[in-house]
Length: 386
Ligand SMILES: Cc1ncc(COP(=O)(O)O)c(C=O)c1O
Image (cartoon, rainbow, N blue to C red):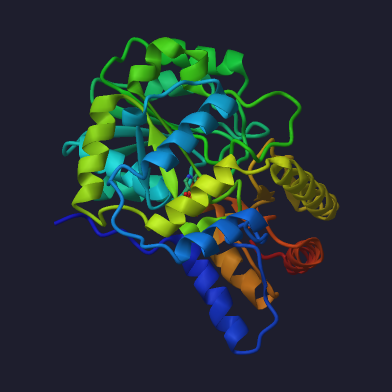
């Protein structure tokens, strides 16, 4: 039997916030990494048009038209060329990652995960029989992984290494030079596959272009699974369309898992994803600018507090806020619910002593939530609580 994980701490906090709201409490919810925008209009129109057609099963690795659209997207976004047989579509990037682990991990295989990390990675690894090896990235501004930190975690038992940039929750992005350094560390370990989780590639606030490991180190591409999807960039979280691009043998195994699991993600949803990928891209630029304004507005409220330290993230839509002298971030997150703001404790991401706030929330609500957080921490400092 698989190891059953504890419920996702992110969803647990979101559920608590929703329950309190249902009781009539005024709670600002900054827990979920869920864009508050609607999907682009042309996507909705394409879905409406497709809904009237017969929609049967699609191939387990995704509709050919979608895989073609992904091929074009990966070429435009990353300058990488993949064949149609090197792409697997799943119910969100999440399922593709899970399928990849299930298809490749043997009991005791190690998966190297730099911390802070997306809270789902360690649980997925455990459920698939693997052992998460957490690499604590020193809390230098922005949590930038250093090559020597990565090198120390690798061993003959390493089956996967996870690189996620822009990162959830740190927002870290890497330059081509930094990725070159990671590639040099990874080359001597030919049995280690590399998960490049680029789901936030389009949500970046730095002027430099997005770089991905397979483009920077093409000699490693036979070991890299590049993962992306429509959830974050196109505000289509509920449509559940994500994909992985990688070596044919791994894609075949991922597809085999998919075909005996839920067969495929919905055919209608896949057609909507084609419309998103092939449609105009200005909306990505506009939304990026809005996220940036929200990020900066939230930072100016939070940075006015002597109890908080927070770096400006390069990408994604999270603030990882360090709270001075904080021993127990879970208790603090629960106390903050009483103060009317829901956030996720940093320990859920391997960042004890921090809180994660999502700024995928409309500006006035976000500012109100940050002000509540600041006032609650001010009151806590006055009462001398730890
Ligand atoms: C780093 C990271 N990877 C993958 C995912 C999963 O995205 P999807 O909605 O495509 O399953 C998320 C969602 O929060 C994420 O933050």
